[in-house]
Image (cartoon, rainbow, N blue to C red; front, side, top):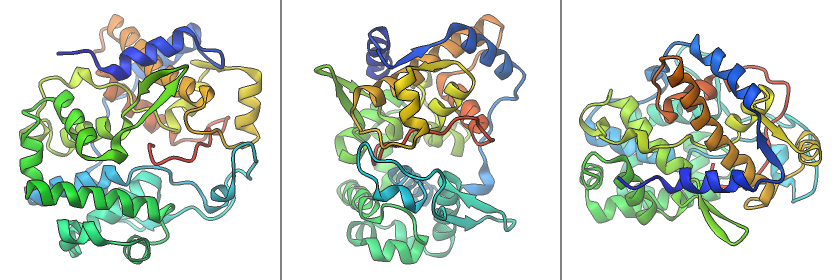
Length: 327
């Protein structure tokens, strides 16, 4: 098994970082918090799991659309300009008990409803032609509908080529590494990478998280069985860096921290953004090691899930703003 290039190049970035740094004492303190938390579990109430082929299509669509759920006011920003924290009403849907769902869970639950009530949404023909306006009709005013329609067109083309989602996933032969390679080969919007000081640095957030979502949905069996889950890294997004910074596991330079707190748009592929995501990946690797020394064996993606759950509670610092379809 080849080393995950995300892990390799994130480590390389951290070694020469100028804006973001790991804090060993903060990492140790956070690891002690994680020791007391139960293992992360799959939240089945907000996800679809039914007929096998439809479930696989649902997961492809879910992670094709799993990016950027900002409130509307932030979409008028350009690099260097400032926005109001929380300005505008965030896209939401009512949950199974009437609770207000936002972000990822709003997406996963609304798609579950479509899988149950309008399964043709997940057909190759529909996905290949759906437009931004129709997407709003079906999902509500989800942000960035044009980008999301483009992502669905790519999934539609993949399904048209393979005929069935199951045929596509079988090509991976129960390998997380192979599945990520297949996803990034066939779906251009899953090719999440940047150029940092002349070097290609991959993150592959949504391709990797689809592997974990298969594992969670199918309970590690059938299409959820992978022999190399340890190959996966953390899924560097907005919330994990925010949590790590809040818990002092990451330190940011004063100028970079000030820009985030001022709600400036941080350009995708900038040194600061790449260093923040790379440090997130490496910080999770450090946490995995610290937990292992205390007798708790979790994989990086499981530590990611624990941190993401913690990040949903009130934090003392904001997340960075980078407008992108990558995460």
